Image (tube, rainbow, N blue to C red; front, side, top):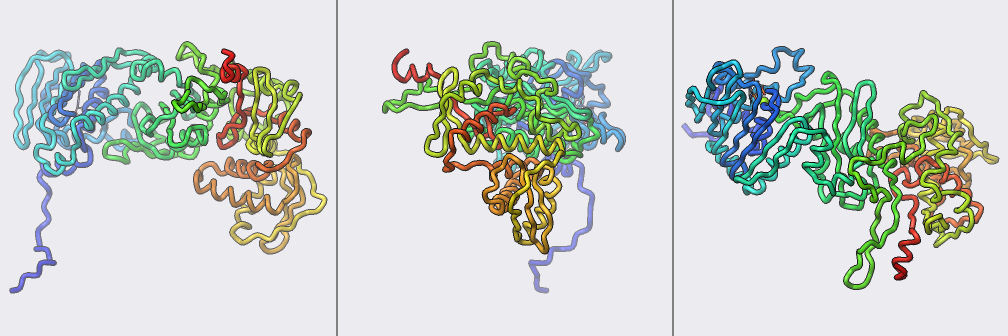
Length: 609
Ligand code: ADP
Ligand code: MG
């Protein structure tokens, strides 16, 4: 009979032997030495350890040892722990819905034992001696040993029986860095625990138990910590706290965005994006923020069982969390005073040209942790609790109104004081407004400034729900395409709140009868079309912030442009409005609105100092 190679021989279904099943499962849980360290350290935490000692060699591929002073196990449990689906952490589906431990899948020890040589020594307080379990492939042995209360797991020859994985391992230095990342993540989220980490006999860190601030300081050093702004905010169901880097503290890689969910380090693109988007245009191109964000919420509101290494989580109300985080981070950045002062610093380049860099006012701070408490930076008005414009968006039902803002004009006194600024103003290249400030010269980007003003006014109107619009002498009829038309209809309620008076006018056609009072109605049709187009663009980039996208696209398209000539009166009016804005220093996208050149800077340049 001719053999047909494309037909596989028929085989009976069999249940995989346990060691093979474990080896397959191990592929998901244990990818590299760092995964082993993560699982073992999490087990130690789950066992209530106060001190965890981690020692590795050869980047972890050759040797990993994790010791803890936790509860330990008796002999029965010590043996059972290596079976797949062996766990002491959950018993029922209900437990799975409110997990407070790191582990729950009962896979880690079984997986580790399937791909390495493992020795576990463990003792409970009430037992006289410790149990040692040694596992080498299929064979295992137990013996009695001496040990203080706690558990030590030693893992050698990782992937000795999985050549494909072994080949995939990178150099010991690279693997060490992955282990280091894990250690850093765990240490950051557990400042109350002492960690001792050694690589090739070199002590990497020895961390004492302390407060979150102390831990951050120990891990990152004073210089870096000075660049951080604390955040802390809670709603009924969520608490968001942590530290976010000032925009001037941009990082070259994304690896400094730490996100923890109920003490567990997780990767979540949406939330990381929420953090990142709060920095929109505040960071230099190609740099990323440094952030340590802790999210605490009822375990029932999230599903942590969506990833074998438990690195991902699914949130019930991802949108709500997205908005909350963006707002909290934005607020923090605003509080830190995003106002860039032009500084020539010591950046004298060899060719005699001068490197300009931005520094923020807050650099003079001394104590690293006394950072920008709202009371010392922004005068609290009666109704403000430090929430931003975006915050107000979320609190619409409160129906705040924007009349009482006299105190806000005193932000950074002298800088935007209409009295000093009103003296002389110049327009430069139909783009910038130059004016005097108390300590020097202020340069304002006219488009961005107007954008900020319009944005805030629109927010106030949207919240107040007063719908006051200025009737047009000549209503504009606009023929839209079906897509534009349906989008406009969808946005109509918000547009009306913002001050647009729009009525249907036949198929795909609308009549604009009125506009928000502060907008020049020169080309209504152009404005509406452009606004819709920009809104669509913003929606594509961040679909979760629809209303803010609408406000931004309105502000951007209705604002004066670079290239528009302004009269002195118009410039003054713009500056006056800007000085009354809640956040006059960055546009809704985060671009700087103004730049201050202190007299001292000029003095320095002219060699007066
Ligand atoms: P999981 O953590 O998901 O329960 P593991 O395979 O990591 O699964 O561990 C299995 C069980 O072994 C745990 O549920 C726990 O009871 C026990 N165990 C593991 N490590 C330790 C430790 N360091 N101290 C005390 N008990 C441990
Ligand atoms: Mg575990």
